[in-house]
Image (cartoon, rainbow, N blue to C red; front, side, top):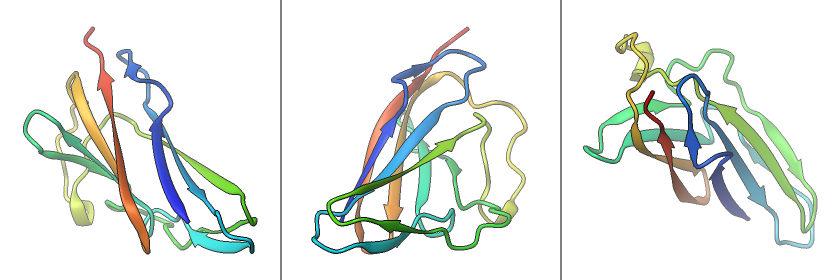
Amino acid sequence: MKLTLKSVKNSYAPGDKPKFELAVQNSGGTACKVDLGRKAAVLTITDTAGDDRVWASDDCATGAGPALLQIPAKGTVTRTVEWDRHASGPQCATPSAAAVPAGTYLIEAKAPGLAAVHTSFVLAKD
């Protein structure tokens, strides 16, 4: 199986909520299952300027049980994640309420048993 990640757009205008597509491709000849739940398949956004962690999909993830998806032989399943442009904190720590500033960011996806993947995107200035 192979994990891929892409930003729906390269740049997001102020007020636009970035969307990311996380896909798992099954190159095998038989169907299999993969967990793309918020605690298993974790997306993490960092600031490329300082490598500061900005947001992660598993921070304070309520109702974040397993999301087992069946992937057909030679098939692909995709999960779309929308980010509200606000920082998050591990274990529900309270981050700043302000929206994340304009700049270039890196997003990484990790899932058990699959190689981590990443891509970048831009939050445009007003």
